[in-house]
Length: 178
Image (cartoon, rainbow, N blue to C red; front, side, top):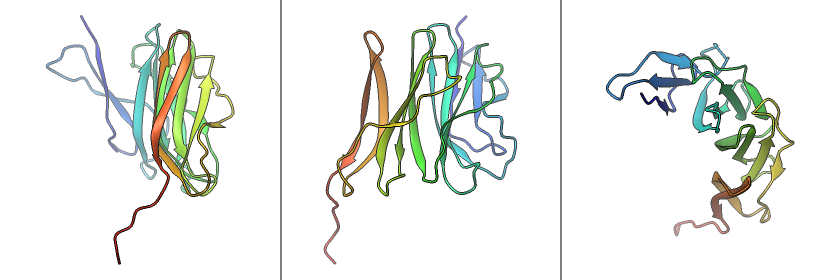
């Protein structure tokens, strides 16, 4: 019997949900992924990864600060029936959006996102070597000056935990004739 896990960017009573299905024909009940029960704040743009031990990691952008979007993660070690307390990956005074995640081995989790902390969009990266309990300080992995913007990052792992990061870059601005 195969379990299919599906994530969706839905705002359901202010929480992100994951739907679990043991058969492809029917879906089970919603499972809360984040620990924020207040419907006044939004969570969106989830991404999910599963490690070699079938631990599930879900990352998303979160507006719980009520001033800007931040990046959070929650994990499950029981196939998605329960999720642990949210772990902030990056919280600062600027927006962080569009997170992507990959898991490697039994405890390595890598996350990238776009970040506006210096007045334009850059790509940032953080890693966890303890199955998502704590993350490294965010590191800027793109920097092409103040006039260029990088967005929509993605990440994959090849070989022996050698992570690969990609994203979209805009080096010049196009505008129609007035």
